[in-house]
Length: 337
Ligand code: ADP
Ligand code: MG
Image (cartoon, rainbow, N blue to C red):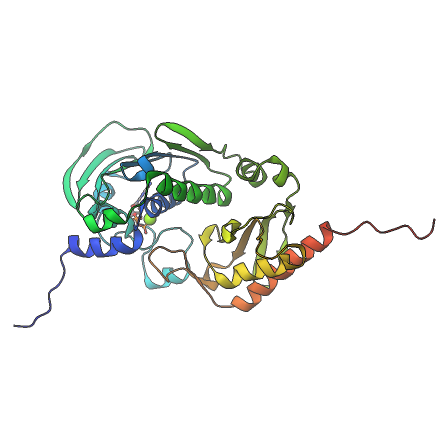
């Protein structure tokens, strides 16, 4: 007999969970992405003890029917991809069908969902379906994730203080609010509301809330184009700078991403105006045909591959550089006086 085993579904979900849900922030990211994909206009995120105790996310999106509410927890079950070609043309935040089964394999999950016809409650405990039954719940979806990593002590040990875990969550929620000003977000920690956006579509308003009225008031709107790309968003005046690189936020087609080269293009454009070791505050929205970007690089979806990366770096650099030049011009002395 051979030595190779086919892993059962629970075990493979736990392995996948290692990459998708490393800590509470990763869970919040995946669950909020699902709310966005469900066309929610309001998303409420309630956190207890940095998410180590409970993460509850409530949306007013399209919901699921009774069958999908349980199917959603099966591995590679997704409503967002149907065939191979779809993978090169992704218009949703999710597509892997991995988040819910991964999360449910390392926690206790209750989901309530209402699609306008069915209202269903599904309970899953560390990968085992406890119950699936009709319930009363408003239109949309509520998902509660409790007792994270209680059965995986090595993982649990890796978590830091509730305050630290919450700071990561707060950061990622603010990033969503900046990329989706049309969605109203409410974030609370241990019962106290700490962040709230109105969802009226104004990016400037979200900027003011996060970075303060003074810095946002003088923010410079970006507008750069070439054959393939459009650059939008806002950059702050160089005097509102920071000691870390975390405030240069990059989005591709509404998806938050991490990319060293694009970040460097932003820093290079600011370089003439900033002291050493100081970094700008910038929200860079890059729009492009979905086929120009491969989002299927890593399960957490932070990384992307671009087919014409150099061209995009150049456009980002030039757009910011020109915007800064235009707005920071020293007033000309009138020589005809
Ligand atoms: P993916 O987002 O990659 O499809 P997930 O495991 O995150 O995978 O979710 C599985 C499926 O469950 C989704 O494709 C979607 O159909 C459904 N789903 C998850 N969350 C929600 C939600 N908040 N509202 C409506 N449907 C949802
Ligand atoms: Mg998802």
